[in-house]
Image (cartoon, rainbow, N blue to C red):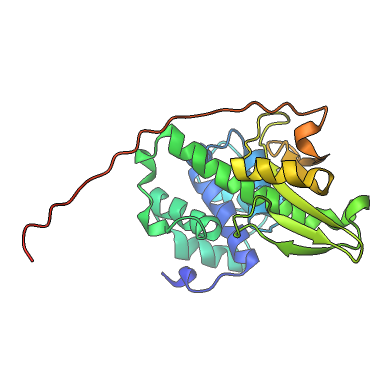
Length: 255
């Protein structure tokens, strides 16, 4: 399909808005979102797109689909929006859902391997939602950190793919901070630290900061927790799980 070849940020915003307009509540359910504000914020930040742009494009497409919203009925659709709507009109819900996922999750999974959406369990939707929310929180951090007094004039190293127990290193000539970013869709909730993250926080203490972005369902806000394991506003509980590992032995019958 032509629109798969090359997409800029505006194209992605248009396609997400089109997906939300055309498939409405089904689109929200596919990602495990409870409302449209959550979808705008999580998908917007995850894709480095202004959440309001996604809403505006959804409104532009609303008059063309059978949902309960009026949309922008008194304004003609813009030519470039109409072109993308025509190019994407043959996409089924499953294909369109995978297509939107491909903008965000390619570093985690191969999109062609995803099951059809109607076969996705609640647990699978939860994992997908957490991955996208995590990506949204990371993008939020990279946009906001220089506006925070204690991080101004620091340089950034992205370590999200290094598996080192933190997502970013901020450094200046005199000091370093090590940032682990977490995202929560609600205003309050639980965060999960891996053993590696926990141990790194214990070793680095005041140099280690949990940067928690919450309330994606309405308007995201952030909190900073330096030396988080000993912070008065967080209580960590150790959770151990025993995992049954099944292996298979193959007996080679012929050489």
